[in-house]
Image (cartoon, rainbow, N blue to C red; front, side):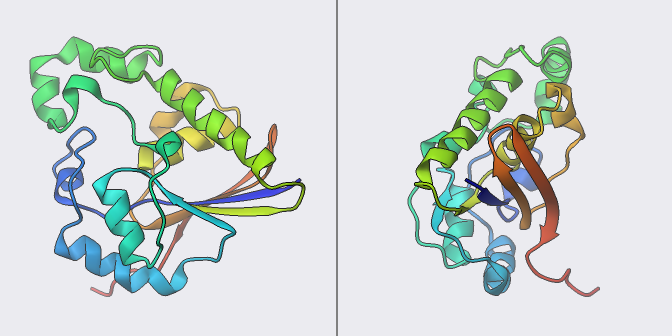
Length: 197
């Protein structure tokens, strides 16, 4: 059975603009406005879901999606670094940040390692094949950029280090189609035209 997975990265908020680790905060006015403007470009799906963060919830609402949180696609658990600025943590704990960036099994923050995040994303992806009941399934989700990147790493069997080389812009659609062990990627489609200016 072929599954189509469409993942939308949420709109910007203050925490993302400030480069905070997993800064779970609601959308600001600009992020909500951009998400509402993109609502007409959201593709149809058999199943809709979102990550549990406030940013994913606000984006899903602004896009007109009415769905509850899916714990399996929650954002990356940054442990004691959650909500802190990358620059501050890097200044206080440079060796820990270096380990986090270079060793996929490291979790100096006490949360999930990169390997654990990717493994969780891969398990979720595998569950979708059985959820289709033998027919093609189209799944649409609003999930944090780290989850999009982890899903890509797992689907394409990339080395975990490739995670750091994948950029996921706000309000873009990343698509995967296929089945376990055989996925094709379509990445980075904007949901609406770039603003003029």
